[in-house]
Image (cartoon, rainbow, N blue to C red; front, top):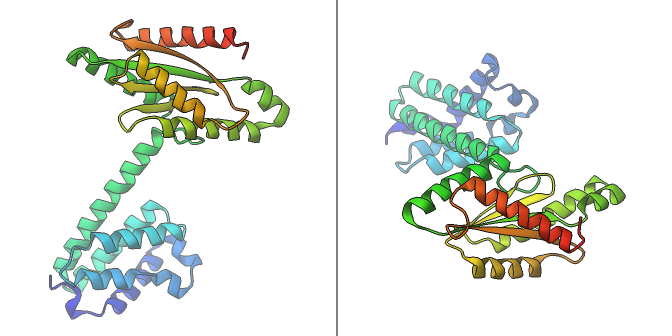
Length: 264
């Protein structure tokens, strides 16, 4: 790559920042000092002319900008400004590399936003919608390929009592503690979600009744002192044939377990 070999990376960075400020494309730069405005931009530009793949320096630059509080659209706008600056200086190959970095950055941000939309913000587990979508997918796959599936529903014992007595911060602590234990117990092929206020579920692939019993034993060993849960499980194809039947059967057994243990 010839790129920025003919032009000073520092001068290009200064020109890029000045243009971004003048155009208002990156307003967050205005609150930074000059060194902050430049950041690692000169190093990123220099990397464009070294003949190596620029994706890693571009990712480092974007992460730095994010740590400074720049929004994704501002980072994308700054890369577009840089592309225009490089074009003006006849650095066509470097401009093309920046455009490729911009595409990769947008793809990364879009993927992160998509994944974030699937997650419960408090626990990091799949949210209700994402978990049930996964349940539907896996139930269809299990029927098609004659696989096995276990759905385990959970409800924290006496959660409302603890929440009312000690406040929402304690309630959130209990929810996070259970989520950590549940995620640590699930295998890489399993799925864990928060399906309601203090309701959780696990989807265990290729699991039978014995697997569920062992799963529950490992989970309860991981629970901190003072935290207990009720559980109910249902199986496909032994008992159910659809996702809806799995949910209904697991919920019925969950509340039977809660009632039997006096843990409402």
